[in-house]
Image (cartoon, rainbow, N blue to C red; front, side):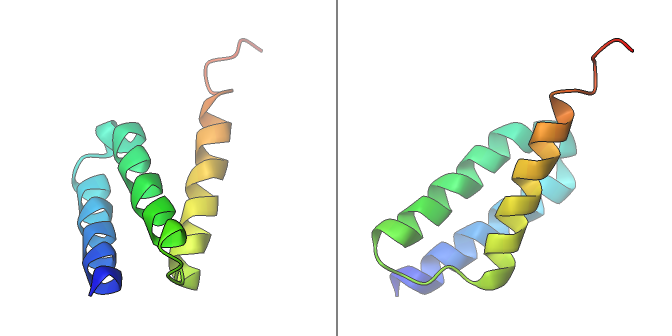
Length: 70
């Protein structure tokens, strides 16, 4: 049951990211925590969630340079 609960929690976080993009960084931390919990419990992390996590990390890295003077 833990797997389904974590998947549902991830889905809720993803919905919140869509609704409140301005809070994306805080919500990303929640998402990472849920993914880490899945890994710690030895549960498989679905491929789409793994890809999303990588994409969010890439987006976050890009954000670091958005305010750099050119």
